[in-house]
Image (cartoon, rainbow, N blue to C red; front, side, top):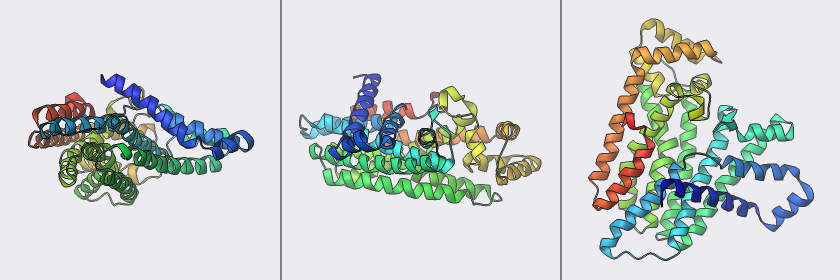
Length: 366
């Protein structure tokens, strides 16, 4: 099956799973008899889950395939239902991502997500109340997160290592929460130590992004196919940690070198939000004293206008911060590929993992 076909299957299954989660008798009664508000939340749950590249689900499916491929040498046995169950588990990752993004947009006060109004903004408009819309967004994120775990629990009935898979899924959710706390704490950091800022930002990427973007999809796929627990988790971390950090570095870079049509967000959106990430740290370390003073003043200000954004991007360019970010991405990419090559997986399994990991980083930065 082609990747486009797999994406289509994932999209269809996600909509089915979310709708079925809401489709209980109590929910039906509320929707039909009481509350237009709940209708809006259900509709937004499905709408917020649409779009995206489905990288996490695809990586989980390919990790499952890679582990199965290697297990053939050991006479690995898989039930007829395992493929469908693995698809559901992969979809659970995407449902959790939607939950995380719904909350993230509230925290960052982001108006757009994937080129459409973010969930809390759409719900604010539907209810004619910013306060109610934000509250509904919080509840929607909570519901989607709990639904993702329930989907994974049911999927595990037809997968190997069910207890270990559920533990990894729960651990992933906890790690993302910790990552969000670390992300918020960085906004209070002083800007006088660029190296410390860079290290702290990379640590946020590890907890908030790599944990559920690459590490968990790999470990869940490996475990669901029957790979031994310690080896599955260790291998997932070895490959997924550098790949996930590189992915977030690339995402931050795309925020300033790409366009809104590609990212679904305004160019320089992270700068406008005042995010203190690795690009800023590298620029502070490499730029002139005059530019450094401007950056510090801009990022300690309550807001940044379009002219500020343009100048900051210019500083990122001329200081060499963008070039350094590309170098970081390349080095991490190479590290992740070396971990695949050095694993005990068979040759076919390694090819599967290399091919899917190619999708996480733009070719020119690999």
